[in-house]
Image 1 (cartoon, one colour):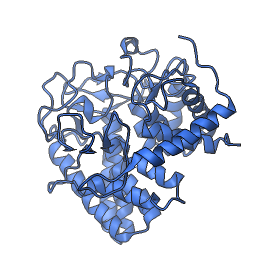
Image 2 (cartoon, one colour):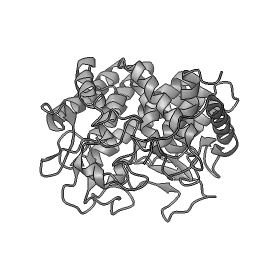
Image 3 (cartoon, helix red, strand yellow):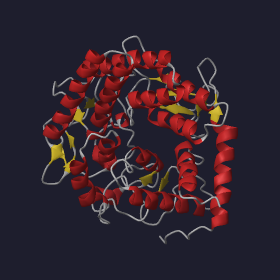
Image 4 (tube, one colour):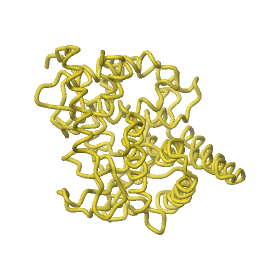
Length: 405
């Protein structure tokens, strides 16, 4: 397939206006019976998934002048906090009951899918809202969430939380989970799927677990609880240590999943960027991984970065045609890059990534702001048009790169 044709400046600006208008007119909504408003994902995903909570933070930062900016941020976070169960279990999604199309309940708990530390999102939201009552509410809720994970997702007592099914990670159609069912067999996500290799230890889930504990430590400090802060810091460092012991291969300079038999599943995939996103690595540790794998055009250093699996991984060849975390570059991954690339000194690479995504999204005919791009050609798949994370990424990129003039 031929690469895309680079779009004109006029086309880039036209798409920018479309994204801003679409979000304003179709994506800000309050569900009946729920706190709100929130940022809806798309018509394909009618509601808010926990992995998309970062969308609301992006919205508040991109549009601080809008009267609803803080309300949307508060509403999206409370959508999950207010639906937390007494035992601490957070829902993985809350759907719009007016647009539901799936069989599971509108407030669902069957897996985890926390792909960015929700505690960190809450902490950063506090930086905008400056509401101590909000911070205290989040601190109590996320402390209970940590309890739930320790009770229900540490069944093998290895100091890390466990993956029970593919949907725990949100990596649909990824070969890293070949032979593993999408979902858990129960509605509570407390029973692992019946498959060889489960329960599994995964770097992306445990990086988020680490990030939650670091954020809880900072929340405790802000709330005047220094002793609790030290406890959370120690717990976070324990996760980091166990990840290096159990999931890191020094020879490969890469973090991998480890199955229940103790085997590393050496499939290089984008889950490693969660380790970057949660700032778990020193600069030296990061550089070793990044320069070896993310500058390599045979792995993740593609024209439209970053593919969800290294291009030279044998498993990549059998990827699905769409909604595939086994090949395509995902808008969610690109949006989350704002959480780490500048911080680790990769600003030039980040600007190149953003420009590639602007070109890819602006050039498409008939596939407007979809979820993923081909990492080599920049061609969009048909997956989920008018995708919130893609539009927020585009708006941010166009502004940052000065493409509106």
